[in-house]
Length: 263
Image (cartoon, rainbow, N blue to C red):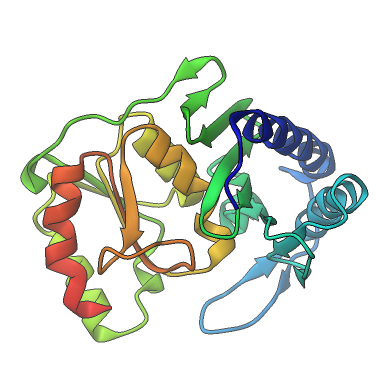
């Protein structure tokens, strides 16, 4: 559904309220002793009471304020709404960083209008940073975000959370082919790396094995800052899977050509 500027502003404000609620639930557990469960799967997939408490706090507020809206959350799954609007939540994106005391995690909150995410928030309460994207632009606090120009992969800084996320030999080989041509390659970062791309400090992110809640909040932030984020074949990234983000649209076109066949 098409949302007016006034509706976008309303939902942005509510998304910030959700970020505040999640922050209050999470902060007491960061750099504290807590039990960690493994959700299982191909890779170690940790979850803590902080993840669950933060998502519960956000879901309660959404259901109270917008009972017709749908919700997709990492921990509690899908709640189907009667409206096309769906809130997509990852209470702690980067739980591995969270449990090791590193501040490279964040709460991801997106509002999808039924066609695409139109509001995105990445909140990092420990560092006091909040990144917001809408169709009007992207901001960190009052500072407008802008990606930097970088037209050559040989001059690019590339990031990826972990090489373990490439779940087929073809995907791993495609990633390594791109990474070998970059000026600088860094692992780690989770959602924080995408916000650094929107801020003009990273040029390329290449990842795989992502879920919708890993990426939807980041799309309005990157796009609002002038970057491009898609699947490896150039289609929408909103369902997750194999994702590539670039600050420079020309560089994105080049990297997609290198990755397209490995999806």
